[in-house]
Length: 118
Image (tube, rainbow, N blue to C red; front, side, top):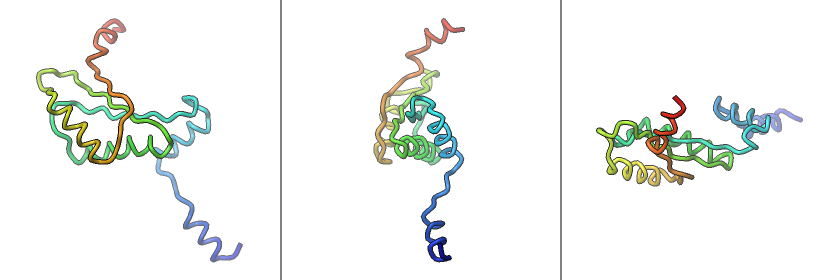
């Protein structure tokens, strides 16, 4: 291979970030039956900010890149501060960013199970 061809190969080679490297290692090891499943766990006690948008892009983007699914798991553990308005806003923001979730879960649906485990 000449220098020009070698440079072209190097330009086409994309390095993985540490998250992608871990996902690919798990996939190569056959973990989770080769499925990629991520989650975004917002607390429905306010509107999302730029940090949430970054997390959404990482969580949903990794799932999308590897043909997986990203679920929402609302961390609704403080009912005094939480409101349906925030849940609806979070769902709209995720759609606005161009992503679609798999399933929607609420931590409060599992309180009894968690209590029983304790």
